[in-house]
Amino acid sequence: MLKRIVVLVSGGGTNLQALLDAQKRGELTGGEIVAVISSKEGAYALERAAQAGVPGEVVPRRDYPDHRAYSLTLLERCRAWKADLIILAGFMHILTEEFVNAFENAILNVHPALIPSFCGEGFYGLRVHERALEYGVKVTGATVHFVTAEPDGGPIIAQKAVAIREDDTPQTLQRRVMEEAEWKLLPQAAALFCQGRLRVEGRQVHILEEE
Image 1 (cartoon, one colour):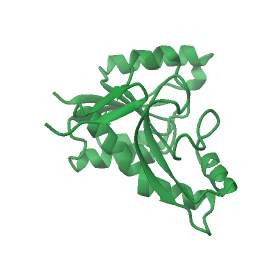
Image 2: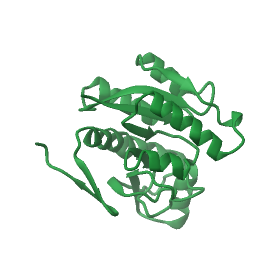
Image 3: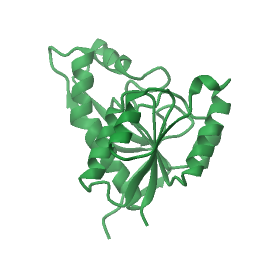
Image 4: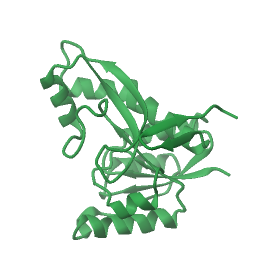
């Protein structure tokens, strides 16, 4: 039985595209993307989903008075889709503890840095890469982790390093981290989850051998 994956998005959907491409190539072993839910109307990610034949829907954040009301509605929608795994692919909203607890160790997020560097509340998008360049680190990368109530604080599944170049700008670095790390790690982690090959013990995520 394939694991049912629901992807939450807010914008262009480049990480969603990486997942859709992996599914098309047969690399999302054990899972299937059954729905894409956007927090914004008109998000290009919905067009990507439509082109791949995946149902999309909009649950606009601005229609809700606070995070909790919004999270509860999202939770209802994910349950309606019978989600086994939820993937945050450029989803720009913090999920409440109720949502996270309902899908404990079943929500994946990709962060464009090597956690615990340049992460936590306020660190998203270009800001992450701006800070990495300001700090002068020589290596950055991406991290896929399980989502907990603490922003970017969940157990780490996979990381990949990307070297920083002398002439990098936040934009060039962002693109290279996506191409070399995010777009590879996220589908791989999703496939491992769907194959039942991730075991969480405290902060440690163990990757089990294929049976």
